[in-house]
Amino acid sequence: MQNKLKIEIHSFSYKKGGIPKDKTENGGGFVFDCRGILNPGRIEEYKAKTGIDIDVQKFLETRTEMPNFLKAVYELISISIENYLSRGFQHLQINFGCTGGQHRSVYSALKTAEFIKEKYPETEVSIFHDEQFNHNLSPISDN
Image 1 (cartoon, helix red, strand yellow):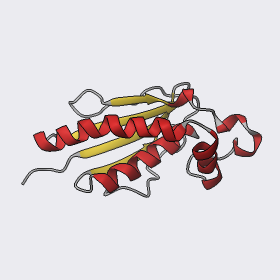
Image 2 (tube, rainbow, N blue to C red):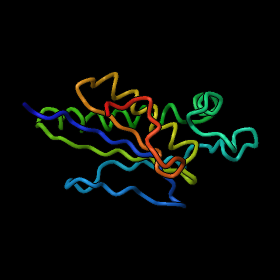
Image 3 (spheres, rainbow, N blue to C red):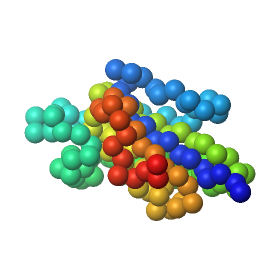
């Protein structure tokens, strides 16, 4: 029996920890820089919140270019996911970075995990918020 394609999604901070290391033998995966998106963390009411909070999500969805950014991300990662599935690959890592690893990258990681689970239910998705939290907080994990 063939193993599932395991997809690890990380949010991280460029300032704090940098790009996450891939612990598999594959040597990495995608790294998307969210710093080009307006940062809700610069607005007082959102500073203490994260990309998991609904009001931060609404801000990113309605007042920034995040929907266009994620549309492009989904198109790009779909090429690799479909290729990896057809070739029996077992691992893909997708990373989202922003300044503090709190708002934009957390949101992007969460929404990308949701997209993958819906479009590719045959995959196993895990999400990790490396800088913001010290553990996997994903509501979308098969583990």
